[in-house]
Length: 459
Image (cartoon, rainbow, N blue to C red; front, side, top):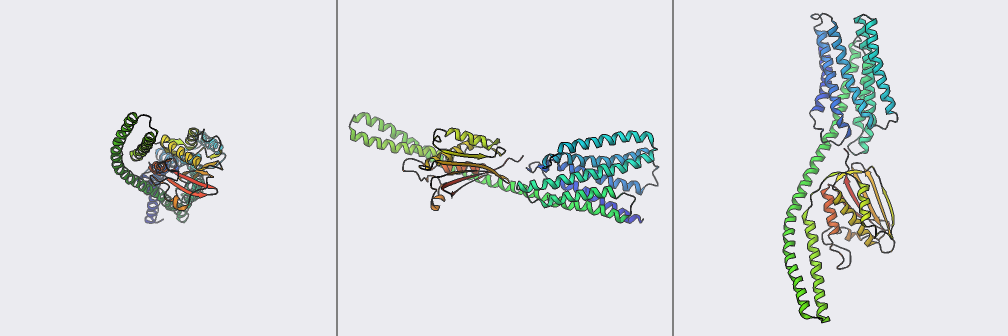
């Protein structure tokens, strides 16, 4: 065979696997929430070892006239091939935890039995056969058992896992499905096409390797998009926090300046009441002044709370526990209510439990205030791809569209004069935005639905 053609073939073949290694190696997957990102470095090592195996085999072929066939060289060939496919088998082993397969334990036990049988067979054949025949049969078994077996199993796990990626909202399934299919095809080519066949058959294995590389390249774009979204979310959150800090400094200064004269006026009311004695007419006027000052003090405190912009202490938490605590805080007000609570207990997010409990408690309290006749409250929690969604639906008649647009604005309230400051929902929205989520209000059925969307903790 023309050595130049053979050189080009092995060069291109090995490059496919080295490209697999570098494509994964130069990507920052540390902050990815996609499960397969944890195991891709193992797949990269497979690419590195397989590329080294291909090029070293060609080197031995190219300079075979300078090498005397020895046990060391033959053993080296077998070990590097076996090592690369064992790495791929380990990748498949870890990926099985994230598939929908029912008999994972059975498959793993079978893999261990096959490995143990192969190792025992090595010792047996080594004592029964001459070394050249022993190496020939060992290489043949490695190709069939570990080459084809590991590749097909790894491809099947990636293909099955692809649906999960799409369901969680990280990206479309086809790139990962094609990666799985290309791995299966490569495994079949390793098993059915050996080095003794013609170059045309070898080219089929080459096409499978480049099909795997192309599918991996498209699959890795999912991680690039995820990282871009993370950076965009971080920038938006940083800009928002900067605005809140600036607003907080201004409103905090104003609120403090207001509270000082209010406190002085309250003391003056007390002194004036003592000086005027029991005159009912004067007492009513003083009570009216005191009530107005108290309301101004309450509003001032609400402004301070809004402007304070509390820092979030993030920790992994289950939403159903936070909602349970919020319901407990309102249990006496909910005694006459018909509650329908349906929360997915698997919903986990990363957030501040105290602040989120405050949000949910405020929403529940508003629903109680709005429901004067039909006293029903429905709370649902479910997963929508990358978000955990909690909805609170009452039967209080809802709000006009013009009111809905203003409901989360500071100081806007639909309650009777003197009964609310209008800062509750504004503070709730601020906390949810700090969690990089969203607060939505819309009319549905017999009342208002408040929807809270929070990023899930997918790690």
